[in-house]
Length: 462
Image (tube, rainbow, N blue to C red; front, top):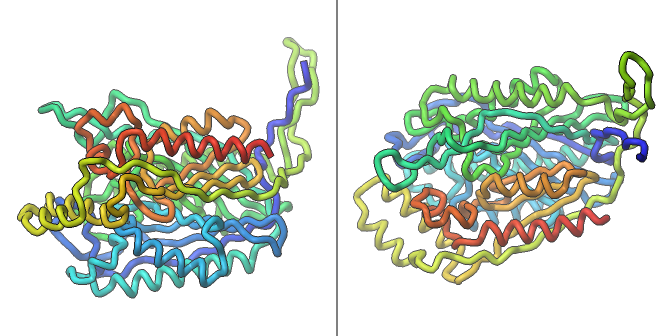
């Protein structure tokens, strides 16, 4: 038998930068994201919103890969997101494959859509989106300017905050969106630590799949939901360095205790996830060390001795793919004009909210039979990063992590847009919210998974 390979947690060594800006929306902004809500404007702030940029380069003058964590709800019109992101790219001289912006998807923040300017508090929306773009650009620019030699260390932890939320209605044949105790949920917490070779902490990140839907129609405060307290918990235990949150593939995952107005519940959830992340972070070795097999020691039993030893972090070239996957649109999805007529005739505020969201999706996707959904795939040493503007079910990240056991796999929903859910094929016969909400036809999840797998297979050969 060969000598066991060292257990190495360092995944990349290169030039890494980090910077943060406060992007808390103004009190009074239109912030209604729930059909059941009775208020339109935010009346206060629970915790601040942040945009935090993490940049990766092999050498200081090399083109960077830029990963941005942004506290925000979701883009309801792709045109608004395109305008925002193209402005950031232009300001910094970046190309589309180099930038992934992951929204936290909080449901206690303003919808990111300019069309709401006519609504109560809507006069704040355009200035806020302009501010958001400037602050994002500034954070990326500062991260690049201050980037230094650093090591990225990655590990996995466990947290049971997220549960399956596809519950069969006890009173009927439909499904409800809420805690289903009969199904398991992916508990994986992927954490990262960025340090200088000497051990100075520069940043941490947490990648977890759980909808930020704790705060709902009874809440009128601007809040990053559980993410705010999660960040505070990690940063209190790892002071001097920002913690970035990246939302995982959480199409069917959310907290069991949700849809409340009490921010203490969101804080409790965040502290729970934060402590889970801290446990994984605290188990890491110092940078450029690996647990290495030393040989046998004869005692009451023949013992295998493993001890920390010096080890170099991977310096494999940064690689990226940016492609599109043609996903089929539902054949029975109404046209823009049909949805406009239905919306104009609706007197029900809940139905009107559903129709408005469907209309905006239809306008974003056009009237074709397929839509080219963009996908970003990066390799950063032994870290694989996958992002798309969909809300994929967690099966995507579970499959990818099983397929690439020698890599850490960071999967993100709601990246560079928000186009709709991607449930697996077998769920389409069910009367389930993600199935009737999504504009994509049966099989879209499998098409995206196959395309991502093919691209990752190529990247992992290098």
